[in-house]
Picture 1: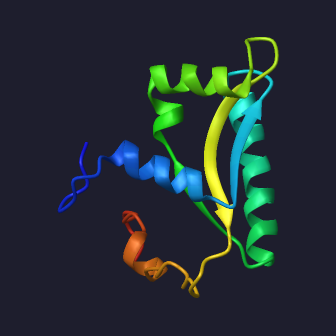
Picture 2 (picture 1 turned 30 degrees about the horizontal axis):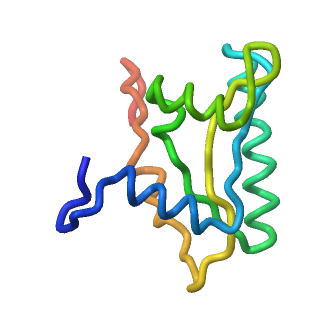
Length: 122
């Protein structure tokens, strides 16, 4: 995959981002399945809340988790095995050079609807 308007591939770009990251974090669970995914999500929420409280930001890499060959290479680099770890997420953590603004949010009414109930006026 290429980044439009650039001769740098997405993998090369991500490699440069990872190499320059103040902290590169691997979130690893002791197993693979719904319970471990839930545990990883809970741990991630605690990490991100603590980071945000300190003014830090996170940026995520999905390919090392979603592509089998990359996931296997990541396990090799982390020196994990079926007995001791399953990478669930890779992300950069650090402070932005410029102020980062929150993501704009849409109004709740724009993204929800109430189903019509027969005999009840809306």
